[in-house]
Image 1 (cartoon, one colour):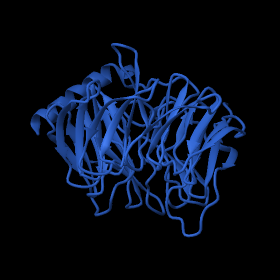
Image 2 (cartoon, helix red, strand yellow):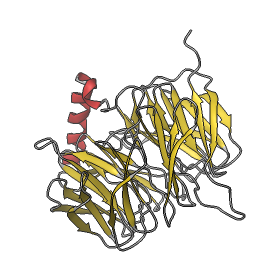
Image 3 (cartoon, one colour):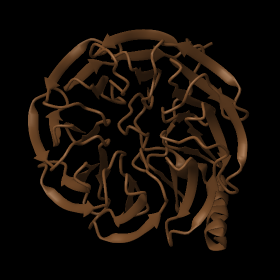
Image 4 (tube, one colour):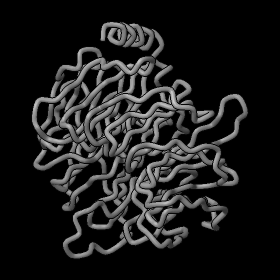
Length: 388
């Protein structure tokens, strides 16, 4: 454990000297990765001004009676359009400023996971077992790739730095994570796991890391698919992991948040004070890890020691994966029907808004706009307060 701990300390020293190295590769006003970047660290360069104001609502589907699952996927944003799917098999492109529908397509299954972009395409997996690629401007289908089971996971796009070729990484309930050529949809490689894959696949430092219901973190060479190692976590992993500075961070159903050294798989630390599951994915900023839990609390954890920095209590469980905005605010939703923004320094509340239905999605932060999908089947868009 000592080598991993020392490596993390060295990485944080480098980070302190070169803070620009940790910024995301996002164009201003866009949200092209569902968790902010390929490594899925949940960060945005946008600075929020409170109170945020509701700009528009778009009803994506009616809420079925007795429905307890997430109805609307997390959104992604590019070129002034919002892209998201929903439980009734529709996938939408909406105008970012007005919420007006630009186009929609319908598949034979639900869209749970967030989409990603590749060239002129927007790509998403569906519970009908297909990965779909549409022209982002028109909604015309360009290709689709069939897996052998449902797809619940978010899509992630990785660009090979040597060739400039873009690849789609996505997991399926057929126990595989697939790497597809983004232009054609042809399979490059597949990595078999021991059970279902629910979360997105994080990419960083030449590897792709993903976990699932086999309770294992799988580490593969992202270019070739060759397995590097497996890291036993001991419980189901329901969402994506995050990669930063040689360490992979994971929250799981074993009621814990863990940090593991990518180089050798050694545990750096494990955090958990109560016997409640973690579904929300961790967000990483500088020297802290931020994650909501089913203990109704939002946790800030020291990245080096794995100890509590502060916590905030909501009225119900938190399955929404937070986004850290400009290193100042943590933004997330809760099953209590509210969305929140907390001060990163001390966890004090900066803003809250009552939607009135559970919010499980990760927010999309695109310039002055913030988007949440809620369990009433509606996409909510908020706008920054006017600059003073």
